[in-house]
Amino acid sequence: MKQAILFRSSTIVLLSGTLISCSHVAVQPDTLKEQVVGTWAYVSVDTVRPDGSRQPMYGTSPQGLAVFDEAGHYILMTSRADIPKFRSANRLEGTAEENRIVVQGMIAHFGTYTVNETDNTITFHVTASSFPNWNGVEQKRPFTVNAEQLTWTTPASGGGTAEVILHRLK
Image (cartoon, rainbow, N blue to C red):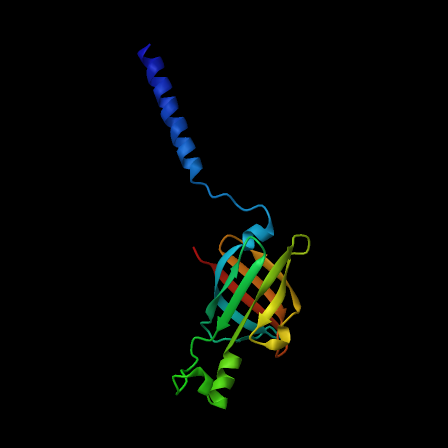
């Protein structure tokens, strides 16, 4: 009888431990869109040329975030880490050279996005951008995503392909 009670107690403890350990298992989102939702920080933004050579577009340590919400809105901003400050404390008084460095050293845009589950593409429906030629356009990009990393590619302005790698912020 004592052994039966001990066996039942051990079984309950074992089952309880199993339930507790299972409660800590992360649930993987079902769709690609669910996996994209969140806040991501830039790791690299490189131009990859046809010969395979790489050139960082925003320096070796780009700064910025990409945020995707569940309703299909996004905002992203990418910047070089080494953009010098303006001599003036007033941003409207930047010199032509200071303004050139800023325009070439960062990009930002926002709008809505859609994810195509079949062909693994994300399409940015750009409402407004720091590069006004993108205002109102759609940009379709192939991408991959997992729990920690989001990567997409797009044609690069200077030739080749731009590869963007981001990591999830927690």
